[in-house]
Image 1: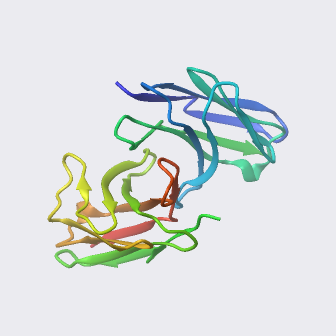
Image 2 (image 1 turned 135 degrees about the vertical axis):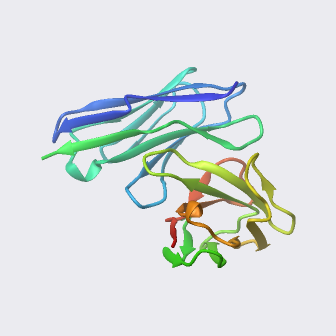
Image 3 (image 1 turned 90 degrees about the vertical axis):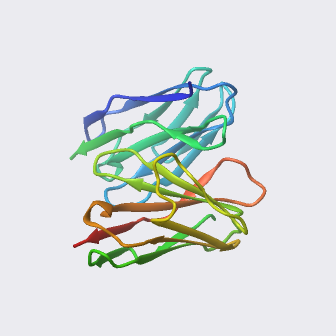
Length: 109
Length: 116
């Protein structure tokens, strides 16, 4: 069964304290792995798409990496404005996105 | 870019009435759009897949007669909640896939529906 698991569920960091979020997936034939950011009361905002193991993408303080079983979202020197819920998702066999439960990040000044 | 808009951003309606939510892809064409529902502190729950010019495909447990979906053009899909009840109150989010692409979904900002 296709499955996506994110950890930790919640993460509190001090401003400037780097860390990583994990997304483990089980899917028959990876068709891409997507990272989104969601702020309270808003729709998910697209961040990255990764297609193959070893691929990396960066945007400001965020870097996403991919292996054959998991993806990491590395946050370097986070700022309070990075506080949000981060979602990862993969397309299942039917093409529908399978979402993890998300990691809620809080960055304190 | 890949911008998706929703209208309205929030709506309050009385029990028994119907409400329509619009989802538009502003700078791209979208053959396929999706409608999700999200409860507080939970992940997105797919309600239905909408393909331009054809009937929507609903997920198991979603009442198709209650949640009417129309995808009349390559840039517009609508969700109508008919005979709304308080339990329909939720955050509804649409997404769209660019025509020619397969899986990458771009999401709208969401619509908060409150049924009184």
